[in-house]
Every structure is written in structure tokens, then in C-alpha cells.
Length: 385
Image (cartoon, rainbow, N blue to C red; front, side, top):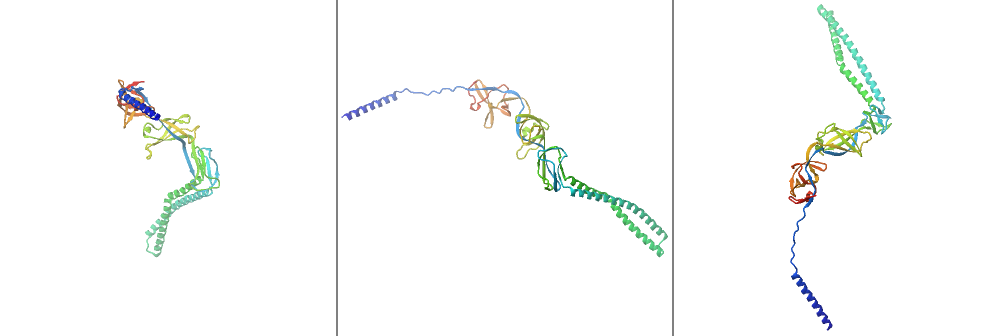
């Protein structure tokens, strides 16, 4: 009995609640969404202004010795003297290494003796030729006399034949001597060339410094048999250093040999000069090789250095901040301000310089949006900061 009574009470409460919910839904006021206008975007303005522009390209490279030399002996023998060690400073013409030269001295003496014998033989042949010419003249006169006497008798005929044979022998001797004297110049040149070659080979037993330098490496020791062409000693010249760079055609077009360039090594700056600049680019990198020479005082090969390469000077050109340029689908724009709105305006980019962009297409003093241009749209209302 009590259970049924409680059930009836709960059912009544739920029914009343359902009726209240229905009444609330039916009597709720109608709501309408109203679009509130967005506040104008706040922008920072700048102007198109004229400036003198001196573009500078900074390129990093390594310092290298001005000159290197990898010295080798041109003849073969045993090394008998090693007069320098790595790190030692040497002067031009200073003796560095020496190999055994006994065989080369003998070759010089032999070539000199052969040349002397050849000179004496030629002098002898010249004197003999003079005598031979005189002797031939005597024989010819005697032969002529016999012709005048006639050849009727047997004795006369015999004398005539004998003198004629003497003349033929004399002419043969003279021809031989003439040939010897005529070829004397060539024979002497051959002998002198042999002597010169022997003397050069003797000099090649000594390696001397071709210029003032620092010894970088010595690759042979006393007692080693050194072959012709074997690496012996390396020299580097460090009183000046070259900064080797690879630059683009745009950069190289405004530079010339002898141009003074600012170079920074670590925290220190100094100046150098362009001493070499390729006229044809590398086929693989399409860059131009360049060398800047500077004093080696306080520096060492292998250091990193930064060169400031000036570009073409531009006088009073229109510039805008880089942040004002909008790049979109291959075109370039800026937003200029007009009556509280921005107008998307096409421009042409000329050259970038640090955080500025040289442009074409806008009058000087035009007011433009300086930043956050990617968030703007054409004809958008803005407020100026």
C-alpha cells in the first residue's frame, strides 16, 4: 500500500517537471547572431626613400702560402748532406741537400778533354789543309810542265802518269781536310753540348732554395739513395699569404686587379690586394677563382679569413625595407596606404642590400606598410601605429 503511494508521488513529480521543460522551450525568446565588424589592423608605416647603396659581399676562404715548391733531384745518387730541417728559414740560393757527385765530376772532366782534343784536331786539319792546297798547286804546275814537254818517250809517259796519280791523291786528301774543317763548327757544338750537359748534371747534385722560404718538409735522409724525380724537400713562402676565393659573376664584374679589399681574420682586420682573378668560370661551379694577397705578419697558412668584396656603387636609388615586400606567385608587391586602406601594388626588385631592397615602380616618399604584409589583403582597412 505504501509502495504504491510512493510510486504515484514520484510519477507526479516527473510529470510536472516534464511539463515545465516543455513550457520553457516553447516560451524561450528568439536569438539572432549579429556579426561584429573587425577592428582595422594596426600597421607600421615606412616610406620609399632615396639612398646611396654600396653592396658588399662577404666570402670566407683559407689563407695559403704565396708560393710553394716541391723540389726533386734530376739525377740519381746517394744523399751525402742534409743541411736543413722543417721550420727552418732559408734564403734564395742557399744549399739544402747534396748527393754524391764523383761520377758527375768525372763526366765533366771527360767531356772537357774530348772538347779540347776536338779543338786541337780541327786546328791541325786547318793547317794541313793550307799545306795541302799549296802542295796541290805544285803538283798541278809540274803536271802542266810535263804536258808541254810531251809524252812521246816512255820515260816521259811514266813521269806524267806518276805525277797525275800524285795529283789525284793530293786532291783526295784536300777534299777530306776540307770536309773536316767544314764540319768543325758542328763537331765543336756537339762536344760543347756534351760538356754543358755534364756540367748541368753536376750542378743537379745540389738542391738550392729557388726563393727565400720556410722549409715545410724534408723527405730524404743522409745515406738514402735518391732517384731522379723523387720528392726531396718542400718549401713555402710565408712572408705574404694569399686568400683564395670562389666568387660569382655578379661579384667579380665590379672588381679589378689591384683593388684594395678589407679582410677579417678572427677579430683583426687588415687590407689586401686582388692579385689574380679568373676570366672564365669553373665549368662545374660556375664561379670565378680569385686571390687576395696580404702581409703574412702575425698570420699562418690555413687560417680562415673573410673578405668584404664591394659591389657596384648605386647613387640615390629608391629603397624599402625587406619586410615590406610580399612575394606571391612569382610576383613582388608592397602595400601602399591610401585613405585608411592598403593597396596591393606591384614592384620590380633591383638589388638587395643588407635589410633593404632596391625597387622600381613606386614614387619616392610613397607611404607603405613596413611589416607583416603576408596578413594583409588588397583594400583592407588599417590603422597606423
